[in-house]
Image 1 (cartoon, rainbow, N blue to C red):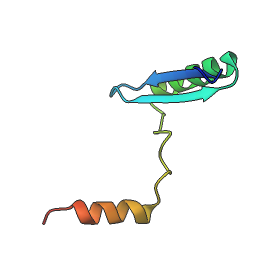
Image 2 (cartoon, one colour):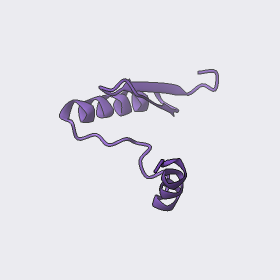
Image 3 (cartoon, rainbow, N blue to C red):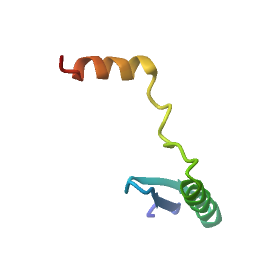
Image 4 (spheres, rainbow, N blue to C red):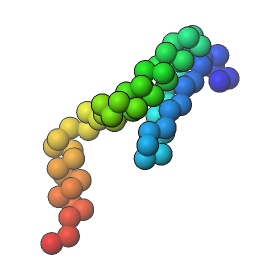
Length: 67
């Protein structure tokens, strides 16, 4: 990257991309390997989970539902 950081990108089985940047190449590689291992074992949760509160999710769901 232009910033001098290393970026790791991993795709899950659904094709969703997960990226993270690190100051060291070894850190990026370790993160990528860890995510790939978790995906292969089936024990991986979305790393973005928890970024939205239940209240925010509920409000979005409530406004989007069709009755």
